[in-house]
Length: 97
Image 1 (cartoon, rainbow, N blue to C red):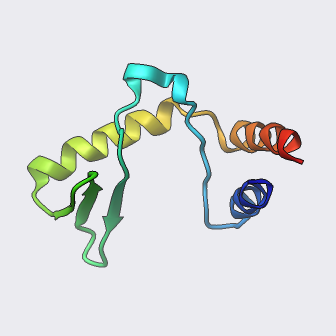
Image 2 (image 1 turned 60 degrees about the vertical axis):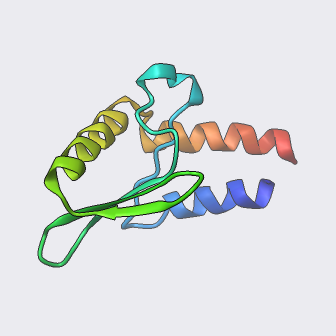
């Protein structure tokens, strides 16, 4: 676990990344229970790939993509900053050594 936490800290130090860790205690305000990936394609269109315990689904339909983008941006706004997230990871890492 310590190595994984260290990798997250190294990831946050890359110049083209942003790392925000959302606490689980966000509770019902947490919009995603399963993995969701949003990708912007070269033509600037956005696709969403959502996974469940049974299957994955790729969708380009704006009626699906737009609510996912909105939920993602709300989550991003409520998540701690990168500095606070790295501090949280560092504290957890201290407990794993």
